Length: 225
Image (cartoon, rainbow, N blue to C red):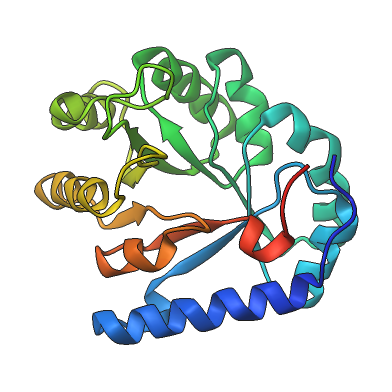
C-alpha cells in the first residue's frame, strides 16, 4: 500500500480549482459536482491529510482493502462518506453494504439479487449507480450500452432499486468525450439524474458532459506504485 505521498492538500486544492473552472466553462455551479477522492492503495496518513484539508467523500476499488483501513478512520470521522467505485462480487455484497454509502458498479442480476437481499435484511439504502461498459471492453465490468435501458428497468422493477445514476470508465486509448456523451444520453432517457464520470486525466471533459460525480485519485494523492 502506498504511504509516501506528496502534499495532498495542494493536490486537492488544484483539483477543486479545476472543477470550478470546468463548471464555469459549462455554465454550471461548482456545487453541482461531487468530488470523490479515490484513496485506493493509499494508507491512513494520506487519507488523514485529505480529511484535514476538508475532503469528506472518498472512493475505494476493493471491498477487502477498504475493510482493512476504513472502519478505524470512520470511527474517528463519522461524517465521511465512502463510495465503492470498483467491481463488486456478489459474495461481497454484505460487506460492501456495511462499508459503503454508495456503490457505482451495479451491472448484473447476481449483484442485484445479493444487494437486494442484504438491503432488505439491513434496512440500509446505499446510493446505487449502474455501470455502463461504453467501450464494450471484454475485460471491463459494466452492462453494454444497448442493454442498459432494460437493465435499469429490471433493477427498478424486479429488485425495487431506486437507481440514482450511471457510471462509466471510457477505454484508456480512446477519446473520452463520446463515451461521456453516450452515458449522459442513456441517463437522460431513463430519468437518471446522477452521472459518475471522469477521473484524474479527464474529469474536466466529463464535467462538460454533465458529470455530477468525478472520481479523482492520482491528481490528489500522487502517483501509485
